[in-house]
Length: 267
Image 1 (cartoon, helix red, strand yellow):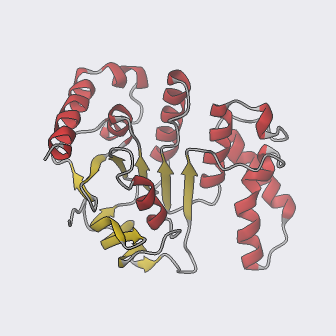
Image 2 (cartoon, one colour; image 1 turned 90 degrees about the vertical axis):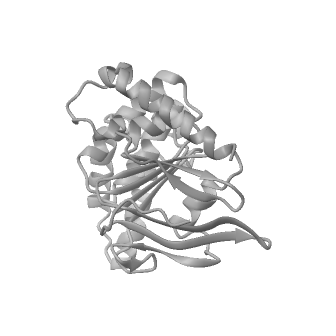
């Protein structure tokens, strides 16, 4: 199914089809996510949300179709994609700073650079940006789930990605920690021109974080996009987050997406 947000220089797919063991999981998805825009995708468990994220990240080879960034293939030399997973993906034997440094080290080796001191400074600044100043030398086991996910977010953002992919990043956290990290993510994204895709089981989270909400439905799964729905991410950046969460317009948007989603799941 072809569903386009707009023509853009951001993340683009063209008839992307993904499968394994002879079974198609994702069928013919074409979508554009412009710079500075967030696409939030909902879908039932097992429909293929994580498979789609893997294909967008270049971790899963598509059966057919393409994924590109600014018109260039994912294998291009300037490929900068940040990925945040539900399970954090931190190395327990590395400190918070060292975990954030990992991507910087790979990048510097590709460039022939050995500027370790510069990497430390950059990683420390990224941790401060997500509210972890002073915890640079802490090991993951000593940190809460929310703090570990902040490290994962810092690690994804430290390379100044052009595309950010998040696979249910907050689903294992308590409600208040989850809301706090949603707020942090929105603040960080408001200051960038990154093309963002987040998959989530939460309709409220999708409406809060997405400029556009999509749903994966069917077998193989196709991507359907809402049309004419003003999500919370489109509201002014300086508006109180608490005001947004209790705004009747936001609550009505959640209700509309819930009805829209059920119609497609039950179709």
